[in-house]
Image 1 (cartoon, one colour):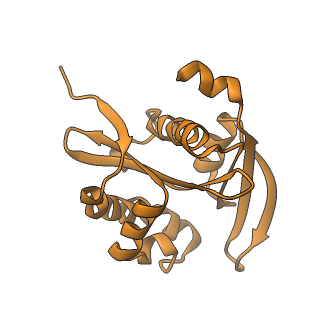
Image 2 (cartoon, helix red, strand yellow):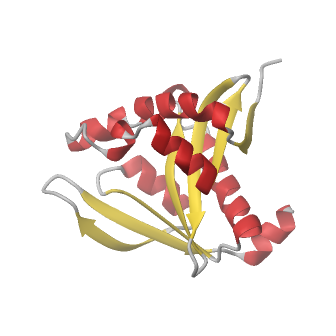
Length: 167
């Protein structure tokens, strides 16, 4: 029987694996927009460790290997910002990204009283847009960052009954 993927809170010991996975996963985004200076590719280990201590960071593990991760924070208005949802390329398109997204939404709603979820992706990142729409997110704005990149912001309201039922 094979090892199953588990999702749990990230620890400081996961930082290096998360950063290496992030670097691997964002190569395709960098190529898509012809921009290898994007923040996920230039983030330092110290900056990632700061995110681990300040926000909600989850990892997906296959045995001891970190094969996915997602981060989130909640502001004073109850809006959760979800960021850097990554899944190892060999495990993509098998539902793990959706599982991570649902897990971080649940954690942010239960532990940090999130009432709305917000995330963004590039306008040409069709796989990301498809995933987010399939999980109830709707586009609420687009911001042109450069000639090559526009960021699409998507949001959805937290459904209280959705998280109560899973508790």
